[in-house]
Image (cartoon, rainbow, N blue to C red):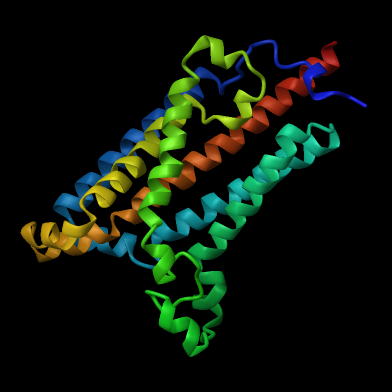
Length: 252
């Protein structure tokens, strides 16, 4: 039986994507942030259309979370085959969690199949949909979840800039790659602002005008897209690390 601690890691103590990939990923993050900021401030109707329920942004979230579920599941499967349980177990949970989130983004097919929920469930759901995250009691904690998840993504990506931490094998799987920072930071900032100004949020919306007030509430859609893209990057980097470990095992 192969022990996890005895398994060789990549020759490079941290195997990131190639430099061209990293530059491209960072460039895409900058373009997305600039695009959504400009649309939010200058093109109100366009911003509302792309961020509406069932719109382009939400469908993008669904595809990203679904892809992450598949990639993370493959990492978990390969790790389980190698008896690398320290990676297999958390990535199994990660894959299942992303699958559930993907289902939530499309209301578990409610908009496609057009089925109706029982009145008891509709009464506790803020949007009258077949979703868990819109249950009123859960929705109150939604921004805390944003801050927690995005905060972990930001802090762990910064931690990986420390050479002493990068040499640990499991850190490559448990932490977000530094290129993920730009995708998680908007969610961290948005979540913290909503938590800090929660009691005064509606008053702040009114002060910025009715049109902008509507947009402030749907800002969470681009924020969620950032989290989804950050997740898929974590899964892809984990897959690259698995391939690097496998290559080193063959070479030895």
